[in-house]
Image 1 (cartoon, one colour):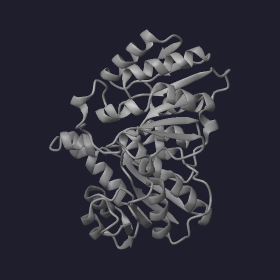
Image 2 (image 1 turned 60 degrees about the vertical axis):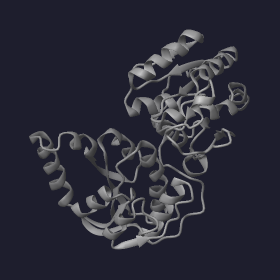
Image 3 (image 1 turned 30 degrees about the horizontal axis):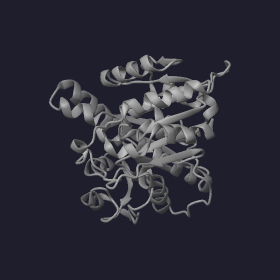
Length: 338
């Protein structure tokens, strides 16, 4: 059986889809998957042994230069390659109008959530096989349910398995005793306060562990420089591709993360991780896997799911919800993992 997956972004969403492929492979031994995914995340599906072909797409970049000859050339190349394929099933795991539209570029039975299950209800009109998937459950569970209904099997009663071989990212050199801070995220309201990272770093250093600090943009680089100035035994990393980040995570003793895509990658690699939640809800999007600890703010409005904070003016700490999730509390949990 050959199946095409439409799941273009984001990093966490792509990772959340992987366990469904593992499920399907256990029930349908000959199943193979191809995958349409945003170019920035194209490495991730390749880490699952059931994925045979990846179609990188650049919808975000193409939209910025929609009328350019270069965009037109790339789009035509993508269209010709995908439209030449024939599949038993095409699963839209994104549930948006733009992803539903992509299902028409290949040949096969189009599958996705029904009117109440798709993220954008109108997308369900594009599907020939409609699946009922409750939105009030974890994203990994939703994907496992969608695939099981689309492909006609019962979800295996087993632990979540992302299908990634952690050993492929482990190095043979003597392992360092380091903890990683995954401090970067897209919402300002999801950032754990900088002074808290510094205080936690001092606890970690006193326990004999070093800290590695990745960054991806100028703002994050400035943050890690300030953290490194206040903490001993820290290393500011150079920019890494996803494979480099995966290797870094796989060899860590533990990870502390805000609600970010790299936190889900840590879970997929089964690295002990503490994830910090303020405005978001770990019940729906928490890092799911072995040795994963979710610490949630207990502020009156948490989880608000808001990109803007209505309490910000009334507090000296931003975001104020994290005042209920202190470095001492995080260290108490982290010490247990270490």
